[in-house]
Length: 600
Image (cartoon, rainbow, N blue to C red):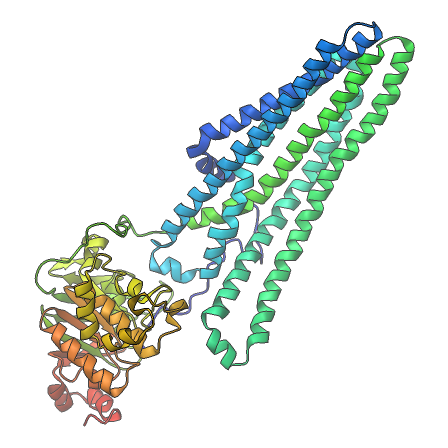
């Protein structure tokens, strides 16, 4: 094992341990950013809802006219037809409004998921390493789902609720100002409850969402090493950890539900109490002759219609508090740094084949540390790898060997010094151009879920069948592929679980070779191969080194004894450079490494 990023603590902004509600202004700015691309359809849904509410508000007046017609023994056909038409029109407009808003909400969620998925895959490696993959996954899945409510239903319901409430109060005032004063207590009572409950809902929801993210991170951690968990007999302990996170999410969810229930109940209760008060006061006014019965009936209908805008406002407030927690977590992803190059071209576009001769690599006095508070991993690394041929990097664990490749790929950047590719500082080379020139085989040889073909052409989506066959032969995978039931289209399982360790390594090497790189980086490429396959792969590497530049990090010196040059590293510095025979003669550290592997 060589030096990797130390186990940095996961980023826990807004974790369940102590999150706090997001400032209202920031939340609104983030919400508007989500709504702006769908503003026209959101406005259309809102206008349809307002039109439906207007049709509903006219109904009490039509009912009053109907009662007046009945008391005068006039024909009620026209008024009854009008009232029926208003009921049907209001229902149709509200249904259409709900569909338009629901359609828009799904579009908001879809756009957010597209944006987040693209951003997560372009995160800078240091930021990604400080995060928990399971928590990031929860933000793309569960957190974006909450946008469905807050970005359309909440905003539109609040606007429609305010306008409808104003319209109801105006019409009630026109009917009878005295009864309106009796009803005003509804708004005061509900406002007091909402003011009390809002911050509590916000805090509970923020913590619940953070707990969901923590639960996803805990579960992903266990599933990512399922065999190790099972072999260690740790199923119950890992299950308990997931359950603790789930229990915490449940606890905060129940707290939010309690206050939401209180807000919802307060609206209905206050309207019912107002109804009794208005019925008593209105009955007295009818008895005194101040108003007629039709006016009281219309007023009572308006009082019941008051329930809907009040409920809309309460629901909008609740949804806003729930959505604000999700918006805050999505906002955190937007604040993470991403690589600046545009994303790679999609499958089906022209294949980019690095042109030009084999690359030259130079490290000039490179110093690197993962974080300012950590010690240096590299302490003035100096060496050169000329174009074409194989350069091997060896040394004890922790010497900083694999980190050289992380710097070459610009997963990290030097603290000081320069890394040159063909004489150019790699910090000045566009990332897409830099990485197109490099084939990189990681130490653990990751394989993605999908088919074997999908993995082989990951870096070369337009590779021909002939190129694929050629690389399979070169990596000794051709016989293995012929033995598979569906050949190249055989699924490899999650993280390549249906392949052996050696097969995964050869697939990773074939994937890199298929790209036709000018620089090939192999990090412990033969660590999981048996002797026969290691010898075969050494021949593949030597053949590749005749056409391109190959850099190899190796613990097993048998892999690199034929290298053109070997760089010996110790404690973050280059100790010496030479061939296998030269180093055996003059370097004690290399001689000890070779002796432990029976190479002397």
